[in-house]
Image (cartoon, rainbow, N blue to C red; front, side, top):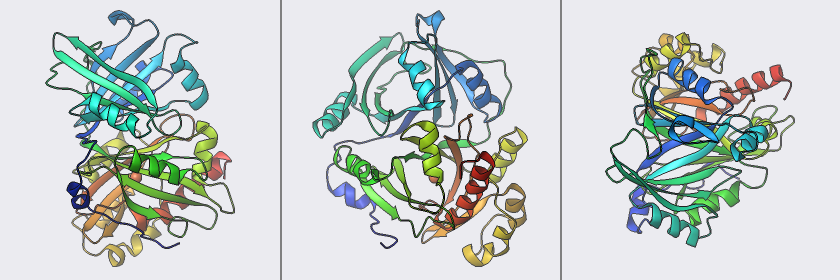
Length: 378
Ligand code: FE2
């Protein structure tokens, strides 16, 4: 197989009517063991602001949720209050992880029926909830593993998050670190199922295949993986899908699937306008990143050409650089952010480039393998 199989532009899509127009990511919901403490982590370490809450005090009996926000990024951290709730079962199986990738739409009911008509499996039929700040309609469908897509129609809702939640702030004093929006969310799926999920996004959600990476692109001496990136019509929502490929040792995707007990969200890439500032702050606050050796920086200028940032500053923070035909990008990956080696974050700053850092794959995967070796999972 060869490298770049298909690269299509948004213009292609614009010619056909988009049956699922998306305005972006509305929120990402994690199911976690302890939402109160997870909310502290996101406030203290990542600089999010607490904005809303739902739980016993708001009439819920089986769960509580904290909503934190930075730029356009909204995370919902939900924990179970009873052992028999589906949330508790989700955590018992998967550990802390992403349950919902919610998509912002103008018409949740239409989004739901258009996708279900094309084969999406129903998770929650459209429901409208109202309070004194307006009303919001949501509906959910299943995607890979136990993960859901929820369509969120906000209309002109003026409340903190949604009906059922109350506005809530915190006395914690943390400055934002400059995170702006969700750039892409990556799913890991089981061996042999990547194409079926790409087809799901194409047929059911009207996405287009943007890029294909095969095991020639993404392999090291020991491990390999394959990846295809799908994007919605306007490019606001991009979902790379990874599956493991045969290698001499266990790939990071297999490690994920072993510990997550199935397919799920591997990483969330969040964009910043100033990665040197963002990563400097995150490091000060204790976030740990994957490490690439100094040798990476020796041929950096030869590989990517002139860039605005000082190579020394990038080296000091261990930030990676890659280029494509349209520009370059800067990126770095955190270590997993919960006990199991599953979900992690990418911090990305795009300077023209629309790609995903192919030039860094090898250095990155060798870095992940060093971590796997320490965990005894390589
Ligand atoms: Fe990524």
